[in-house]
Image (tube, rainbow, N blue to C red; front, side):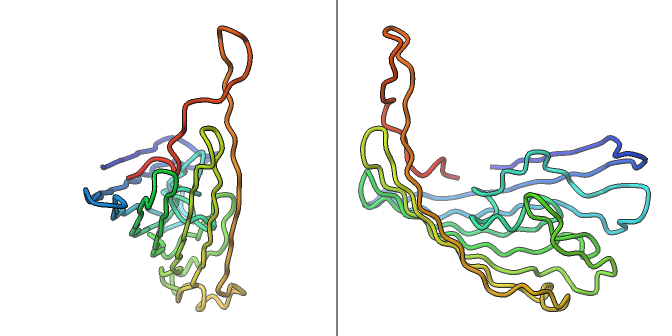
Amino acid sequence: MCEFAWQSGRQAHHRHSAHAGIVSLGYTAPVAWTPRIGFEYAYSPGDRTPDDSVVETFDPLYPTTHPYYGIMDYFSWRNLRNARVSLSARPTTKLRLQLDYHDFRLAAAEDGWYSSSAKLLQDKTGGSGTHVGHELDFQVDYKLSARTAISAGYGHFFPGSYVARQKAQVADSDWGYLQVSTAYQPDHDTGRWRPPRPPEIGGSEE
C-alpha cells in the first residue's frame, strides 16, 4: 500500500508547501495462528529553514497517531521518519496478539519533534541530530462476547541521541492501558438497541 499527501496554501503571512507519504507491505502465513509480518515506512518532511517565509512542515490536520506511530502517542505524522515492523497472530478466533517496533527519526534536524498535540523539542541549528528514539509496543485483544471485547497494551520508549544531546529530562518511559468496549446499534424495525454483528477485534491489518 502507498499513500501520498501534498499541501499548499498560507499560514498567516507565510506560504505553506509540504508533502508526506507512507509505504507499507505485509504477509500473512496460511498456517495455524495466521501469523503476519508487516513493514511500514512513514515520511513527513520538516522545515530545514524554519525562520524563512515558507512553511515546509507537513500538517496532519487531524493527527490520530495512536494506531500508527506508537501507542504512547509521542509522535505524529509531522517532521518524521518512522520505520515500523509489526508481528501479529491469532491463537484463537477470539484472541489477537500484536508486537510493534518503531524507529523514530526527524526528517529535518532543524525542525521540531512533534507529538499529536505539541512541539516537544527543537534545535534550530540541527546540531542535535535526528534520532529521537525507539518504541516497543505489545497489545492483546480478546472478544468476550458478540458485542464486548477487552483490550490491553504496554509500550516502552527508549530515547535516542537527539534527546541526549539536548540534555532534555526525558528518560526511558513506560505506558499501559486496559479497556473494555461494548457496542450496540439501533434496530430500525423495533426502535430498540440491539447487539451488532460480532466485530473484528484488533482493527484493520496492514
